[in-house]
Structure formats: structure tokens, C-alpha cells
Amino acid sequence: MTAIPDQRGSRWPLLALAIGAFGIGTTEFSPMGLLPVIADGVDVSIPTAGLLVSAYAIGVMAGAPVMTLLFARFGKRTALMCLMAIFTLGNIMSALSPDYWTLLASRVVTSLNHGAFFGLGAVVAASVVPRERQASAVATMFMGLTIANVGGVPLATWIGQQIGWREAFAGTAVLGLVTIAALWLALPKGAPGQRPDVAREARVLVQPQVLVALLTTVLGSSAMFTLYTYVAPLLDVLTGASATFLTLALVLVGLGFTFGNWLGGRVADWSLDGATAIFLAALAAIMLAMPVLLGSQSVAAVTLLAWGAAAFAIVPPVQMRVMQAAADAPGLASSINIGAFNLGNAIGAAVGGAVISLGLGYAAVPIAGGLLAASALGLVWIGRRKSAALACPV
Image (cartoon, rainbow, N blue to C red):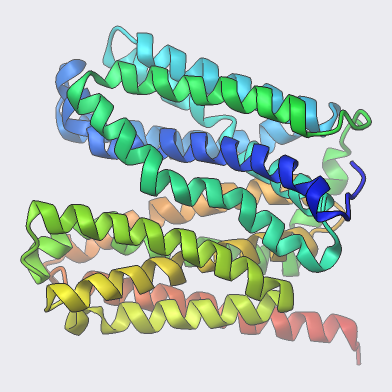
């Protein structure tokens, strides 16, 4: 797909990709707020219903490389439309699921598009703008995901609670159809892809600089989800949060995600390593200070807004770092990096749960996340050392 240097020419492709990201974000996060309703609807316990979230994450990790390679021979527009067709089918299956196991399988089907859509979408977003605006373009696509946390997820949760969870999934399926139409209208047809050289692309992915970049993504995402998974009980214990304050806090986190995504893209246009280091340092500092800052609700509100901004500001730069490190296989690397985010989600949830299970208290949860962010910051330093060594061999 050829670059479109004119800003007006890139606006519609980026909007179409953002609409797709909005739909994916809505279907990924809305079941978390609907677990009691879904559990009652398919007659299982809430912990069993929680496996729907885990199944989605596993599907993202497995589907990212498989779907990327499967659709590599198609043009980018066709591939992205096919991926959103899978998204639509999965949500329709979820809406029609008669029992828990069918719903579980439906969530896996829905998740298969996730990594490949964001991976290929990031490549497309970067291709329609000049090089100096590529990180901002990727951030524009991810903006749909962050806005979903502010608008799409609360709306789907309300529909699920007031009308029914099946209707919430059906409404999300409509977003898939809207995205397919937007992609068809906004993206140029482009040339067909080529059959991927799996062995060559795999060799690219095991290069040290690529592995370091991917591991940075895993640790950064782990830091975020160590806290985010347990934010409700944490605020209840440390802040004495009411249901109203908890709702406000989640909205503030979503707004922080949105602002951080925009800011991360802008700073990453200046320096990928610099942006990654700055925001990981900010994330580590905020999380390590949280046990003190969350004692007051007013301070907690500001802290959560800042935390959300720092947590999502790392997304555009780490995505671009992987794409640049794996320049000979950017589509596959970009998709696998989305899987790395989801691996981080699972690790972060496990770390936070372990801290609580060990009796260390909820105050130790953000500290554990801060240490993970600091570890990711150390990997950025290691990555820069490796890049410098490759550029200036002795």
C-alpha cells in the first residue's frame, strides 16, 4: 500500500481503522462488567464465567501469528475486512450461544481477529503518512481502543444489565459490519500480498533486538494489568470508594488512556526509545507512590488519571519499536506484539493475584506493578546498548 503524504488523504483510512479498534476494545472489555449477568444467563459461577476473559486472551495470542500469515497473500484492505468478518461472526455466535461452552468457543472465535487486525492495521496506519508521523498514525488507530473504554464498554455494560447480555453482543456485531463498510470505502484496494516466507520471518523474530522489544511490551503491559485487574477492590480497601466514585474512577482511567495514547504517539514521533523510557519511568514512579496517594479520594482521582495516561502512552512507542526492529517482517512482528500485550495482561493479573494471595495487602499491588515497569525500563536501556553495538561494531 503506497504512502499518502497528504494529511487529508490519510484521515479516512485512520478513521476506519479506529472504528475497528473501537469495536474490538468494546468486545474485549465489556464482558468484565457483565460477568454476573452472563454467569446467571448460562448458569455458571462468576469465576467460571471469568474464564471467558482468559479464553479471549489466549485466542488473541494464538490467532495473531496464524491469522497474519493466513491472510498475508491478500491485499491489506481485503485482509482487514476478512478479519472484521471473523469479529462479526464471533459476536453473533456469542449473542446466540445457548450454553456456557458454546459461548466460550464463540469468544475464542471473536478473539482470533484481534492481534492480526491491530498488527496489520498498524502497518497500514504507518504507510498512509510520512515517516515523521508514523507513531502518531498508529496512536490514532489505537485511539479507538481507548475511546471504547470511555464510551463503548459502559454502553455495552448498560445494555447488558438493562436489556440483556445477548443484545450487548449483538450490538457489538453491528460495529463489525460498520467497520467492514468503512474499510471498504476508506482504504485503497492495493496490490495482492505475497505468500509469506515463514522460515525467514521467524528468523527475524528471534533476533535479539526484536526479542528485547517484545519483552519490553510484555513487562510494560504486565505493570499496567497488575493494577487494572484489581482496581475495584484496591480502591475499596485503600480509598473507601463508593460505587459512584468507582464509576468515576474508571471513567478517569479511560480518559487517561485516551490522552496518554495521543501523547505517546506525539512523543514517539520525536524518539521511540525516548518516549518508551519517559513513560515507563513515569508509570513506575506513579505506581510506587500509589500506596500513599490513594489515601484521599480527590488525590486518588488525579492519580488514576495520570496513571491511565502513563500506562497507555507506552503503547504507540513499543508497537513502533517492534515494527522497526523487525523491519523485514513488520506485519507478523506487529501482530505478535499485540499477542505480547495480552501475555502481559495475563502475567499482570497473575502477579497482582499472587500479591493478594500471599497476604501482602492491596497496597503492595501497585508496588509490584511499579517494579515490573522499572524492569521494562531496564530493557529499554539494554536495547539501546545492543542497537549502539550493532551500529558501531568494534
